[in-house]
Length: 132
Image (tube, rainbow, N blue to C red; front, side, top):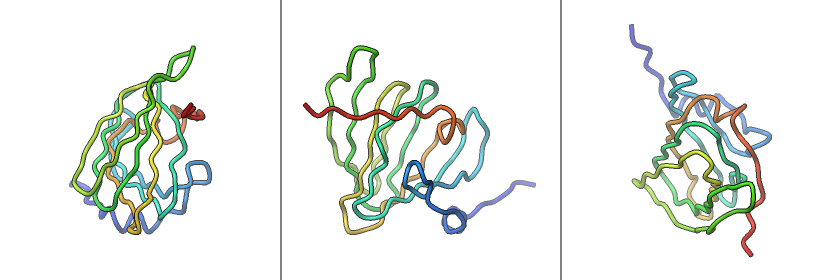
């Protein structure tokens, strides 16, 4: 039998992650491919980080996100970009792409994400974005 999981109920069951300062719930999948739901309150930021393996695909279910991204190299960060994504938008983050997501909207930001399960723990590297 297929396990059916209600994303919003699962999100209510989890507490905020102490490191990422978000609510994230693993919905289904394995280390190769997993499905997550993420919640960011108003004025909350997902700290800048990158992953070494696997893609992340994001879909904005509700709210408005400000996204900063830059390619990570050992020498520096290249071309920091700032973009806005709103309800219905989707985007893909490749390995070594630094990404930081902020909710500056009045509505709670809810994101559905597809990524390896390791992105939520061992394959997560924090870094400061240099806007200079």
